[in-house]
Length: 141
Image 1 (cartoon, rainbow, N blue to C red):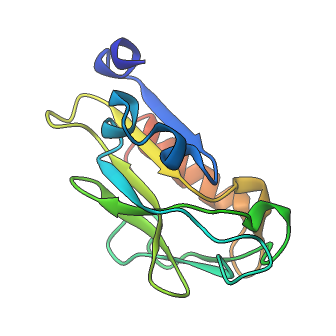
Image 2: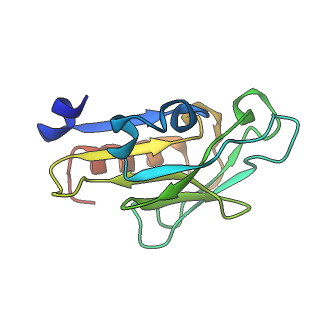
């Protein structure tokens, strides 16, 4: 995976427990973040809404999430090191980050929420995916 990213590619990875299960690997470091903590069981308060962070590629976007349902089980929260925060939840916990490496030679997005569990509202998942792809493929926003 390191060679893939170092060759200037883009990578999107998601998973409620991805960072928790890979926290000690070099791959997680490629996203510029660390594990802040593991999430709670789905019958607890995890992710209800996601709020796009100001001055990021998702500025002004917000989405509901399948709160207290299957995808809302053990959702990690992240600590950005070098990464840019894209989405925080209703409790201001970081759930999605992006980073382009120390030298800006690749682009990566790490999401602890499941894309398919986002709920369209004022904004659609299609719009979000276009912004992700623009970022990953280094197209101007």
